[in-house]
Amino acid sequence: MLGVIAACALGTAALAADAVVCAPGTEMPVMNPAIFDTASPPAHQIESMAWLVMGICAGIFVVVEGILVYSIVKFRRRKAQQGDPVQLYGSNPIELAWTVVPLLIVFTLGLVTIRVIRDVERTEPPEGAMEVVAIGHQWWWEYRYVDASLPGGQVVIANELHVPVNKPVWLRLESADVIHSWWVPALSGKIDLVPNHTNHLWFVAEKQGLYLGQCAEYCGNQHAGMLLRVVATPQEQFDAWLASQTAPAVDDQGVAMGKSIFMELACSTCHTVQGVSDGAFAPDLTHLMSRQTIASGVVPLTRDNLRAWLDDPQALKPQCNMPSLKLSDNELDAVTDYLCTLK
Ligand code: HEC
Ligand SMILES: [Cu+2]
Image 1 (cartoon, helix red, strand yellow):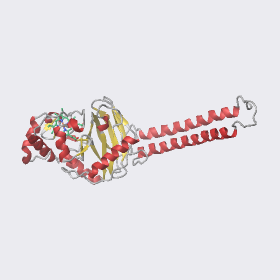
Image 2 (image 1 turned 45 degrees about the vertical axis):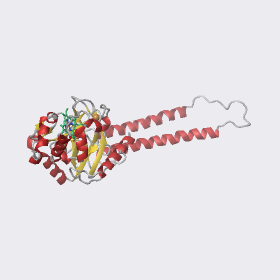
Image 3 (image 1 turned 90 degrees about the vertical axis):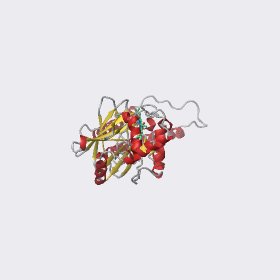
Image 4 (image 1 turned 60 degrees about the vertical axis):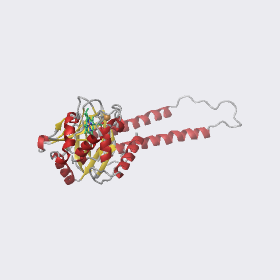
């Protein structure tokens, strides 16, 4: 598992170096996606518990192997020895020791685990938490910021979750199709997104930066292409970002042709662009250019990648749920130009 996470981190580091052409990406540190390098209270607790369990196991290993090696050396067969060594059957002190000590260890680990689970799996949101709905789709993430003060009561985005640093986040986890699992190791433990059943998860990103993760429940062909990205910024920067997401889609007359192709072809039945189309099957594209990647973190958002994606999504993300619409070169350019105005 760590190998997979490391590979996804390497992939994304290479990705950050690749200049984003359509939208200049915000420069930010990329967090280590590991359970031993945490930056959020529930993740810290899981980390400490993992160390405790490993410490106890290491202790048991040393004691058991130590006694084993000692016995092998001390009681080995010697040259002068005749027949079998003295045979001993049953020893109350020893039997007691190897029953009571393991019981105590299991009991301790049990109590510690219960305490950690109680803190990590809350049933109520933490004080002052911001609620976000996360919906798993084959094979991308939808997020909804639900707040009566927002125009329309909510803001819908895809794939790149933005949160303020040092503020509790209460995620409401739902699924549109099969079981997925939300896991950003530096922020929290993994929790499943189950169809027709709501789960919750909380975290507080303590450092600014980009946190990476991965869908952690096998959910079909592109399970590995369902990457998680959480961007933690200071509150003011987050507020500015959220305000930009509530703005209506840019309507640039210069790309009217691309827009009309978007409307006439099936694009508009699957995708929402606020004020233009209301397809709800696929990622919201209203502010596509404010993202750093497309296809749920699979490729960086550059003009070339975007055009290649529209040409044949199946080449970049085989088996994904967007078909190739067989656009001509001119149409591809026009639609790409249109999407590049959706800042
Ligand atoms: C049958 C529904 C469907 C149609 C039609 C469709 N798409 Fe998609 N599109 C999807 C799905 C599903 C995804 C998410 C794929 C994934 O990441 O697994 C997607 C992803 C995208 C993305 C990447 C978004 C992101 O943030 O990751 C863009 C851009 C896009 N589509 C544009 C278009 C355009 C332009 C058209 C018309 C030429 C179009 N789509 C037609 C379903 C559709
Ligand atoms: Cu998944």
